[in-house]
Length: 218
Image (cartoon, rainbow, N blue to C red):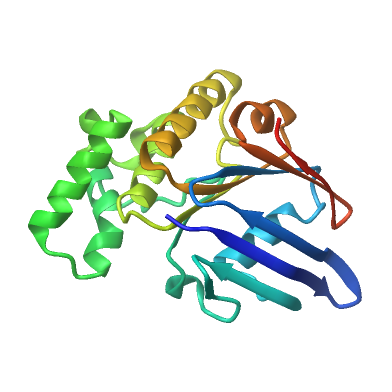
């Protein structure tokens, strides 16, 4: 996996600050929660790490490599969104296989990687179904499997449980943390839910009004 470093990273839209200059180092294998209300800059920070949003100033390093101006596809990251972003016309197996097929991976390797993540997330019984037939919790497990299957250096999660009801959220919190510990994956997790941040994060970055106000352990 990889260390993520943000050095004086900032983002402006016109004259308005979305994120004021911030320094943050996320250790190799660490789970860091970005916590704050809507509009505080946490999702913009995540999007800058991913390459989906260009920085206004500062530098971003992943595993010691300057990735500031690399595209999202050139950074070894996986993104998990609040809304599941699965292909409705594909089966669960096809959804999970898609990132590997896009890279031209041999079929035997694809099967091996799918078998691994399916066993980890206990979704083998879903493989022939289509996303529209699944519960919200199962769709999020499939989205997680599709991210895990590539063995990325970093996982970036933007309110991945926000669309689930309370019962599913609690179960999926435990699931994501279990996968994190098993994979030793560097994870940045955006949430506005203090309980979620306290339960999952090794460290919490508290943001408000485009500013990092506090960084510390739960």
